[in-house]
Amino acid sequence: KQEVTQIPAALSVPEGENLVLNCSFTDSAIYNLQWFRQDPGKGLTSLLLIQSSQREQTSGRLNASLDKSSGRSTLYIAASQPGDSATYLCAVKKNNAGNMLTFGGGTRLMVKP
Amino acid sequence: EAGVAQSPRYKIIEKRQSVAFWCNPISGHATLYWYQQILGQGPKLLIQFQNNGVVDDSQLPKDRFSAERLKGVDSTLKIQPAKLEDSAVYLCASSLYLEQYFGPGTRLTVT
Image (cartoon, rainbow over all chains, first blue to last red; front, side, top):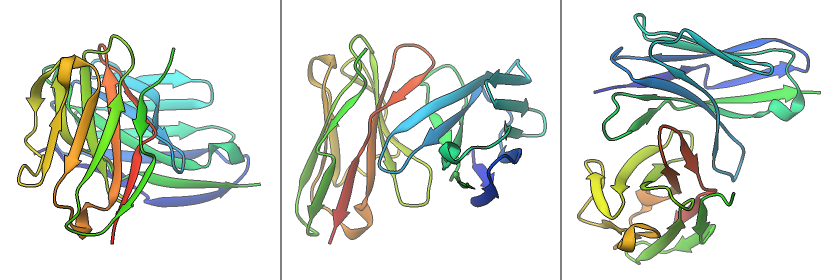
């Protein structure tokens, strides 16, 4: 059974810092990995999707990497801003059939002005 | 493009009562998902529909939870009777291909 773990569970940084969020998964036979953002009282917004054949994806100040063999992914946020404060979730999809996502518990990020 | 709509946004009920949630997916999205997100945890898939057929309901507590997607569009999720541990946010998502789009969720509190 796939298990997804995110460390740390919570993180507080001053504005302007670069930071890294970690995600690990137990079964390396994944189809893709996604990073989501969740704001309080709202649904999930997809940030980046990395296919199993890819090593990284970039969008603006965000960069996600994937090391499938070691079961790890990182989300790098450059020059953090207070507007980045949210919970960040990673999710893995095992195969193309069914499209089922297994989520980690999330990292709650607070960026202080 | 309109997003995934859910109602109600909040619901408070007493244990042993019943409750129903409604989801309207993005137009044209064949696949619809219901997730349960307990406070401090990631979402857990309850049930997945492809059009109006069930693809995966292995984590749905079928003794008290039921879901349907009539005509392959809107969907309802019902809990009867509710327990304290059902307090959570219930998220609906839909997809056309790979990416899932999430609604704002319904926050359920069972007292």
